[in-house]
Amino acid sequence: MRTQNSKAFQLGIRHGIPIMLGYLAVSFALGISARNAGLNALQAGVASLTNMASAGEYAGFQVIRERSGLAEAALMTLIANARYLLMSCALSQKLAEDLRAPHRLLLGMTVTDEMFALSVAQPGKLNPWYPYGMFTVSATGWTLGTVLGVIVGNALPQRLVSALSVSLFGMFLAAIVPKAKTDRTVLVLIAVSMALSGLASVLPGIGGWSSGMRVILLTVLIAGTAAVIRPVREENADEP
Amino acid sequence: MNHSVWAYIAVMAGVTWLIRTLPLTLLRRPIRSRLIRSFLTYVPYVTLAVMTFPDILHATDSVWAGLLALISGIALAWTGGSLLAVAATASAVALIAGWFF
Image (cartoon, rainbow over all chains, first blue to last red; front, side):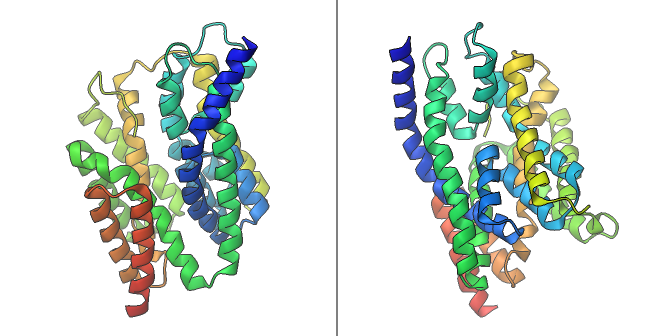
């Protein structure tokens, strides 16, 4: 059993290396936005290590930037990370029935888009040491990248920093646009979301809200409406 | 509303961990409701789109630079550009356009 665990851990480390390299770039951009929200390198590093979520962290940093209150931070994080609920539900089916609680509590930390995809692709029941291995490597890259983003952001001229902050939006686009090519519902969803978001930001009343509250309202409204009029097909429960 | 940054970080970490851990500990089964599954499937697309626009327009000093970065990012992502390529292009376009507008 022990050698099995150590084998799974080593495999996880190997598979975590390409994930880590990708994470370095994304978390660097995230570090820039953390720095723009007023976080120092330590705060940004801890936020990254304990969250491991690009959209969720960005959303949280926006709330911190506007100092909009802890309740809003909780709601924003919930919305931006809601997809992990789906992933974890799927992952729970991959765990041995008798897997003990400490493992289950720790495994939650390893559910990111990339690690989830590799974990559920493992044959048979999941050995928790496999995602632990991936997490060890990729969380190191994720945290280091964020810290670097803050440090480099502090050193570079403002014009360059603001251009670098645009790269995170580029990553968001790269995450949602390809699916829109093959799925018309997603295409319409993205177009409507951007249009309503632009409109909401200039309308009297809602335009004066914090950006976090607008994101929460629009997400619940638009995704809720889409779920009612265009529910996903039964076999098609995949996540982006 | 003047909470310390650490309080925000703690709230973010706690909520994120709960979302990921509850299904592994208490729920332990797939979500059967089609409505909830559909909602959770669509949420990331809507959230990322809403967080990107119009914020990208105000990320630099020039709205036009942001708009050009948005258009080039969408175009490259549409034609199959990798995550890094799209990110780097959007950044470069914003920087270069910033010199002109």
